[in-house]
Length: 333
Image (tube, rainbow, N blue to C red; front, side, top):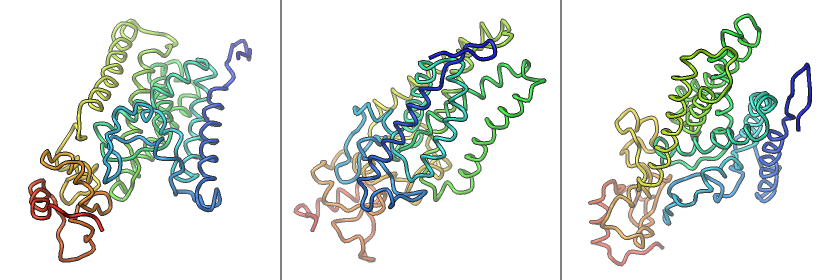
């Protein structure tokens, strides 16, 4: 739907409204199924939305389901949120950055770039946050921020004498800077998947550089920046999808003390999760996973006796195999 305003044809922001309404509807519908209903939902808990919507590569212990072929998860996680503040903050940023995009570029363009960012967020998690269950619309939201950032970059000369440059530039910097500060200060105790934010932002930047109109386009931008950004965007998404499909058990693209310290849930032994350690042990059958216990999703103990202070966690494949060999008939109580 197009309207004319100040000699311009503008699209009504129907897609932004529809996406937001769908996310609110999912929150209300699934929130009512919680014990205590909607009144039991706080600002930062619980997770509202069934696990069938969440993005993850490996399911919870002890089943440790391989979810790589459950392709809907690359997109469906945008309809689950952790508490009402998570939903409200995403909706606010979505309106602030999404409405201007749809007004100028139309319904289809907004929907496409938003979903592209959602997918880019989950595919970035595939190689940089491999053990998390991810929920929220931040991948799409950060794509909109990245799209505005690229618009400021390519049209900054045309905006140099305009207050829009200061306002839009400040908004594009403020939210990622706040996110970065929270990550640096609190990431050890924070379950937020910043990888999905980064992936969405990268997709938005590259998409904007490749396809957004420039007020006074230079030959360098037309013949170098645009094709290079398009190639990088396709390569980034292709790499993320290829890693997601071919790397199992899940592994980080970058490995090392710093990366593990910032990304792994269990920083003591760098084993990732109980499922990742068990899946990496070729000598252990899936049927034997239930003979172990998993504490806080990261530490494996024999049987169901991990509360016994005398028992030590099983941290290596050899330790797991040795325990199974010595306890062939072990079953959970």
